[in-house]
Length: 355
Length: 265
Image (cartoon, rainbow over all chains, first blue to last red):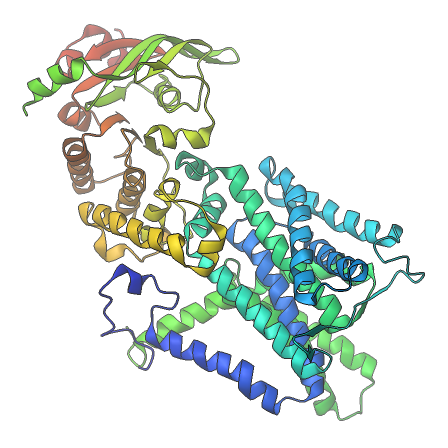
């Protein structure tokens, strides 16, 4: 009844090709941004900001990056955490060696290095697809982790093999408290989400999806498969690199290469599978599911058992419930939460009428 | 312009000249010493029984296969081996025997993808949807809408193609090929699996495209009624050898063609 686009006539292609052509969607977007930028900073405490929302946002960004590659361009990658590590270590090394560099520039530098490494490890995608490509990208994951563990130049010869991120300061503002950190990450994530949304509705995005859906036809239309796939690897790894830098600088503070292990890669892959491949919203929904649901279950578990059951047992039950949720959502909608949301919106257009 | 005028006018204007080509896969000879020319502005049908080498011929024309022997001239110039993604840039577009649409996209996006090579790639502009990146999206949308109007698929432009019925999918695929504004359009069994009405629609579109845009069309088709009705010229292949080439009436009465289709007594 409320979500209906009747009466909203487009009189130009410009209006029809706007980023959110439906009025209600624009209202919802403004509302969400208001909540994220204003309401949450006012009401959330440091624990929520620093330990829940910041990791949620950073991992959303990594999922967004992987979704560009896997969801839009159709190239499966298991090297996500490796590319994140490249971003983190490149940003760290730039700032250690040239301390005058502002940290935002270091993030971009980290992203660029991750993009370069991503393109190099993306080269096999020109010959192999699917599971075989996934295994080839696994090489990136293991190689990068090994490199940062065994060559202490990357950790600035730290004896523990751990890097400590330099303090973040810009325009006289110090990003050392959870609130500032949260706003910084939020701004970066919103910027990237906007950029990816624009990319996928433009010429580049169509080329990616064409390669994903039917590469022979894409080639017959004059799309250069090599350039298109490598561009996807580059853009995706850039985003993953920036998210890796944020993970190190904003969330962890001190990082060892093992923070970017294969488990992290899988975690991010699960996010986009559950959230929805080929959807910007899917990256956020998936990250929310993987990051926030266990915390919710943990709190519920403690609440219901009231301390009668040992924490170990509760932890096991949480895992089981979490696993059951994953299976449940994948059965009712194999295309992910974003598609579920889409279907819901289509139903809402008709509500309260059946059709 | 009557059909006769068109033929005489086209005679002097040969778009592609295929001379004495042979193509084999291992021991299998797909094409053997075939000569074929394609005149500008004609509708040429390639027919033949199963395994006659029709699809191989189409792939030689489009440049995907390079024959082991013989030469291919494109607009009077010898054509060398080309990368598959450069075929479209030469002005050759094609549709596929089995529908090869981008299933995750809408009809509109599919046809827009056909215009990708006419657009200029700029990561920065497209990322922020500004400047040339934005303008080209709007300009090409206009052109795509013309094609959509032309093919009468306005009502389904925002429908994901996977949800469309077969006949409409074929139409979207034709639209995607037309979006390239090709000089030569290759259609691999455009009517396969269609009912009579869908076939009639498709025939109308093919004739209109040929007539209005002057696009040269080469098609493979099994429906003889359609072939005889719409083509200016028919080439018949059998076991990799061209056994007949001429107007539909002439080809129809040739003994070799009848033998190939009905078998020799």
